[in-house]
Length: 250
Image (cartoon, rainbow, N blue to C red; front, top):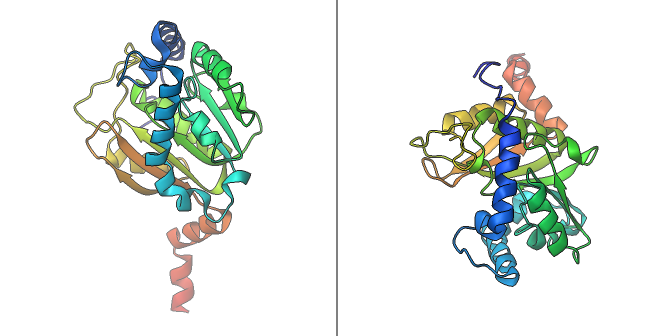
């Protein structure tokens, strides 16, 4: 992927915001979790608890790596109205969610007003500058990148997560994995697909180690990206340039 391919149309973010604001006004809960079109708030947030039990709990050892969850700051990309944010805030010390839709964020802030360690932010749909100097111990995204119509925007998010994630931390996220999907920047519902080879490239190019992927050629293609700590990065670089082999041969 060359630099030209990594660009996206200037109006793509504007269209993403407008479309998701419209969806939030129409029926926010449905467009976040489309298995029902008549969620009540209690059911909606209970579904978030279930998702956390299924998606986050099994990876807690990898996520925490010996740290106390209560002392960890977590980032959720595409928080919507906070369906999973509420549940995450019950596990981790501090949770920040970003979303392109101000309407989604407004609804989420109102509904999560009783959760002091959950913070929702409207971002620009492509980066994490809204978070300022905050640094995170775990980053997560679910049913979000599958709606982003530009691979370049997805990569920019990955680059931004690498920037704000502390060394030795995990980024678990889901993308559209089906090669049958054809994305258009006019369509903010059907997102750009990510192949296994591209997933590997994106990790390597943006300072991550791809630990594993599950769901190849499926809508729910999960990726586990790990940001190495400084010693791990040094060892990897030394191994790549043959330093270890040179020492071994002496």
